[in-house]
Image (cartoon, rainbow, N blue to C red; front, side, top):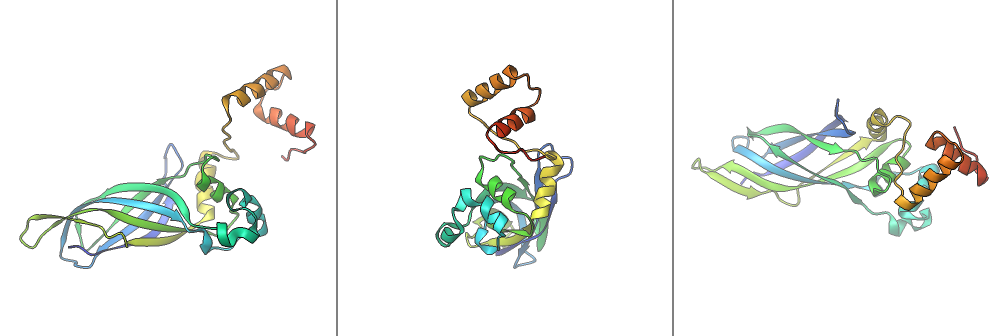
Length: 216
């Protein structure tokens, strides 16, 4: 039975992708270098290990929606799921390197997006938890099937700057806001009634009317 090890050795943006994506370079090794792995149906759960970094005062303010007041973080700050990814690892023996392609959502209704956006600098601590099915060649040359142990995992510290680079490439100086349809209809009517051309003008005028100055 193969005894696999996993290590994330790097990350980079996916070039020419229609959506913001990151490629994580995953090195897989087998304890028995002579054993032939036919393929692996690999599943990976990526967790945000949020307790494993320090936060500035500004970051803590932005994370209030997720974790509450910093005084309560001892109870509220917990690792949470970023995403699931799957891939098929082709035939190898000894070790191999494959890509884990991960979409970087920019939907502010998604908890992970709120977390990433709140960070100013430093690194994002990630935990990769692996599972899946291994197809390998037995001692008699016959095909064998085994399962990846649930204890198999890897860690990686993703630079915040890299995530921001991926997002800014696809959405430069832009953020997406999802609204209920009835509220959108009211804003749209406001836009028409006041002869405003852009949504920036709508929001700027509403902020000024509320006494809040819109920042450039």
